[in-house]
Length: 318
View 1 (cartoon, rainbow, N blue to C red):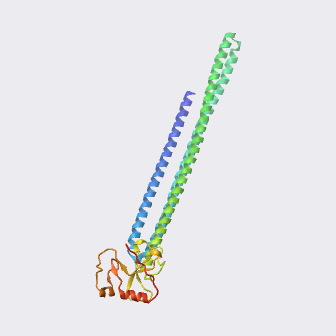
View 2: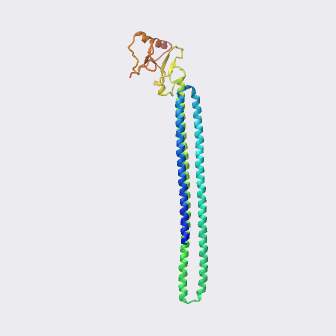
């Protein structure tokens, strides 16, 4: 019985060691796949952002940016599907290996227990026969034999109880390990779902930002009139696009698209301090300066604009 107990303990320890090894391998594999997945996503997003910045400098390639966005989205969808398949496959393989180990361990324990019970039954039968042979002996021998028989019987019963208890503990351990495995599998699936959700949210936000910027660029590149709400999504980088009047005037001007819903023609701009405004009447009549620095639109041009319609004057002092 001592050998059986030692062997059973050895098998339990071996089984636990194998399960722990499998769990560590799975955790390492999941960690590696997670790191690889995040690294590849970061690389792809970096490449995508760099390409967007490069493409924005070339106004004739807007369609290529949209195609690139679609290709990146398709690649990420394929990668997410492959990563999910790999994780589910790894979990399924681990589950099958653990089930096989459990079945093998239970069979070995059951076989050893059954063998021990058979030996115990045979020993009891043998003892009973010996007890019958000594019935004719004197009272002292019978008493001694009975006590010895009871001692042996109690020992065997005690060993049998120990064996049964060990078997119950083994079954309980297997049940607990199965529960822990199911919990781990659920956590892994939740982690995969959460990661996919975060990735979808990030990609959706990136698409929205990119769509806004492309729309703003398209507005900025097309010659338009200076009207209110003409560029509602334009960023601060394109605050004053070059604009031509819809009435066919032969000069251009800057349009403030942000302040008070936009639509303000800028007749004077003094920001950089690089232009001298202490000039004669002829300069003020014709206009002077650079539109992207400091300038005066010109009295003649202002007269032409105001003659074509009704305007509102806005003065901002800084």
